[in-house]
Amino acid sequence: MRADARRNYDKILATARIVFTERGTDASLDEIAKRAGVGPGTLYRHFPTREALVDALMQDWTDRVASDAEAAIASGAPAPAMLLDWFEHFIDHITLHRGAATKICAAMDDPASPMYRKCRVMGEANRRVIEHLDERGELRPGVDAANVMRLVSGVASVADTSRAEIEVRPMLEVVVDGIVRA
Amino acid sequence: MRADARRNYDKILATARIVFTERGTDASLDEIAKRAGVGPGTLYRHFPTREALVDALMQDWTDRVASDAEAAIASGAPAPAMLLDWFEHFIDHITLHRGAATKICAAMDDPASPMYRKCRVMGEANRRVIEHLDERGELRPGVDAANVMRLVSGVASVADTSRAEIEVRPMLEVVVDGIVRA
DNA sequence: CACAATACGGAGACAGTCTCCGTTTTAGCA
DNA sequence: TGCTAAAACGGAGACTGTCTCCGTATTGTG
Image 1 (tube, each protein chain N blue to C red):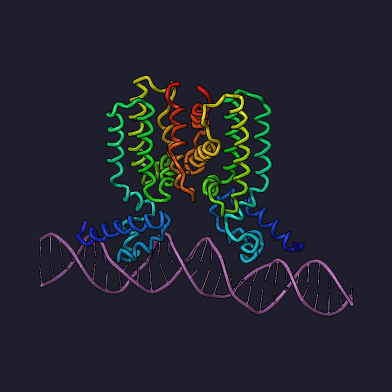
Image 2 (cartoon, rainbow over the protein chains, first blue to last red; image 1 turned 60 degrees about the vertical axis):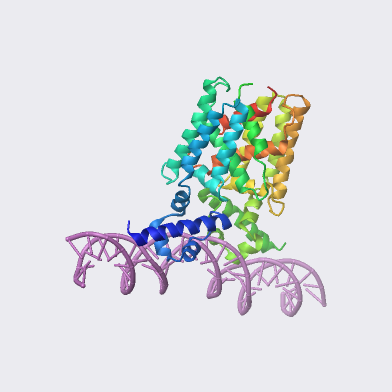
């Protein structure tokens, strides 16, 4: 990659991070280009779709999500506490920008999406937490990790979509009660 | 309302029902106008926003949702079966068109939305089912109906958003397990 | 330093939203 | 029925956002 290309790539990303935070993931891409001081052509060459740009912004999530999962497991807390902690971290990650959670829900089961690989990493992290607890015998029989992830993403999506400030905690508590052994 | 106005109103609604089903709730409003044989001005006069149009299409949901809730209660089934049945009906209603569930999630806690009143009716129906079961002593203490509705809407939203065909049943089972008395 | 390869960026085609306002239709009334 | 004010129509067009094409500029390598 040429030096000027790299420069613009980084500039666009930094600007996108700001604009998406200000205005949500539906913000105008041309505006991002303008504020980054590049032409729209440049933006679209680096990021052919909005999704590709959002995806690039999530670069470092992947690692953090995985390490959050490991930390939760390592804590050795009882199932309910461990799950709540893990779920809240999970939701924090996928609601970084308004509208992000919904996009991730869409990408989760769509192998064609550029975000799909990251969703798989998140799914993997989640699976590890669930399986760990399952091995400790603290979950109901038949709990499916993919299913749990969808459910938690749904909670994130509601919170993300809603105009009002929604408390996710009470919803997560229901989910937790629904999967830990009675 | 003048006769020609009524005629156009109905025509637009009928066309919107078709187009939204074909293309989802993001379809072009001008296209709906064109296919309905009216000018865009006419469409926007009757339905100032997309949301107002979607809302008008949901006209008859309200009644059906309420009667579904009554039917569920009248069935006298045990809590898990009654809830599953009710939740599935609920989700059927709010996923009538692709993208509808997400719009409803947004409207649910936004009194300014034209859909807000309908959401309240749905919320009321849900509350009745939950409270009925609570009175029968079959729910865990502290279950909050509004919270349950958000959770179930989240499930609907995930299923609606996802490219793949998601089974809602397993998710609903988790929710049910999370609210019925252990 | 020359020159190919690479990248830039903005003009503009296209699509969707929404409004304004001159024209047409309707309904009530003489 | 014929007239008229009020109501409604509808389409031209302003505006905004997406995305592409291609002439121009920048880079880095021999």
